[in-house]
Image (cartoon, rainbow, N blue to C red; front, side, top):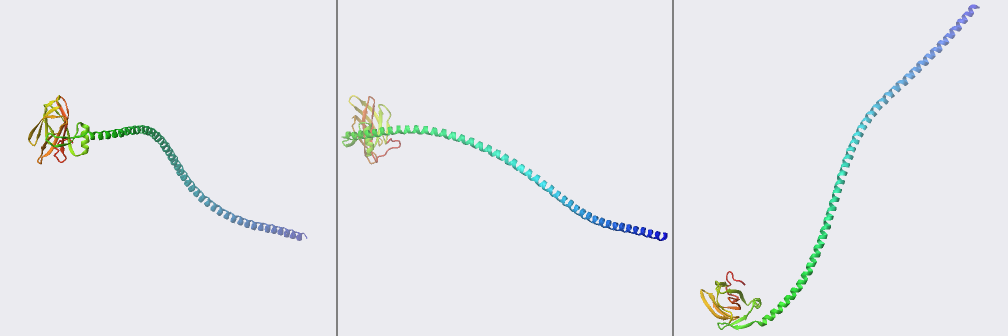
Length: 281
């Protein structure tokens, strides 16, 4: 009985041991499975971590590149902003200078305008004065015309010392101007001093020899065509006539003013007569 009990006890112990071993074995198998599962997960996670680290490295590199570009862009923008600021300052200074120049020009233009207005006022006054003067000149011209008309009526024809009817006789300078304007003959005025040298007039020479103021008479030498003609005791306003030239033409001289030792008058020649190199008109 005891043997049987021992055998049963041994069997019980063996069964328990086997059970323990079985449980341990199962536990070990489970632990191994769990370890495999954990190892697999660890490998996967390590791979993911490695990939993540690689991506992080790439992102860091890209971030560094981006930061470098950003810094370069920022510096460029800073330089551009700095240049733009300088340009703005320069343009501002230029605009201020231009405004100052425009103000100066405006002031000068205003001053010139004021000066011009003064000049215009002065010119207007001068024009008014000139108009007044012109009005006076017109009046004088009208008066002169009237005087000329009156003078024309006073001009006379007289028989010359050669028995030839002379043209109109001028007894003074104004009447001589009337004859000049008629344009029928050439007229040369003269003044001769007693005892003076011969005076060239047109193509002849005149020399005063004697003056009789009391009786208004004079004596004169006329040199023409290489010959001398004495005109003796001629009277005031008397046409003194002589012929000269290759084809002889009639010359006349008239003394219309007589003083103690001086006579004045004019020489009259035909329009086609030689005038001489220095003859007055």
